[in-house]
Length: 220
Image 1 (cartoon, rainbow, N blue to C red):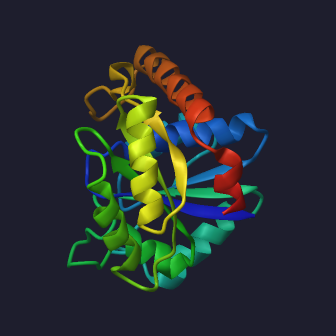
Image 2 (image 1 turned 30 degrees about the vertical axis):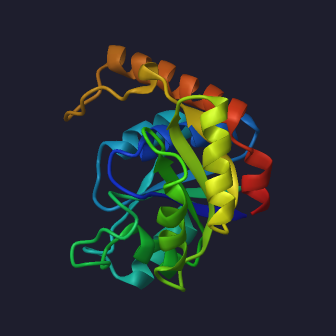
Image 3 (image 1 turned 45 degrees about the vertical axis):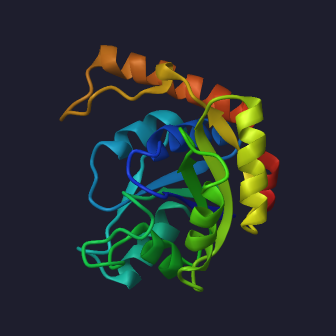
């Protein structure tokens, strides 16, 4: 069984879009994928279920003990080939400094982190950012980086060099694509909206399959 958490440098980096694409792409490989969501979020798990075709489970360090979280993680993913946790906000953002954050969850579950970095309007400056996330807390295992909103292959090559100079594996990218923008969130998903989300999920999966090295990700 393989496990990882999808985190991000900041909110609005594209965690959910990349997560949905990864869930569907891994599922398309014939893997049983169990999704989870950090925190009490009730909307992203609906997207996860559509992408992985399997109910998503909330893991909330504010309302549950570390032991309960571990039990839920193991119980609901006991028959899965891979368990994928989507983080919340920035990787180290919690209700009190790092408490309740995606980083704390990854450390508690002892699983590696894939960092999503919004690469819009930036190139080599991502290197110190990635280096900081990798070394800020020695308990955290930063396995690799996926860049989001990449303008071109040339842009990606600059980002890849920056990532490698920061001492971190570069796993690929998702191109800048306005069609991948998730609609405004609200309390429910109607049938027509679910159909639109299905199209968005498949588009995200197509981009992930084309530009992210899934084999390297699984090997890591």
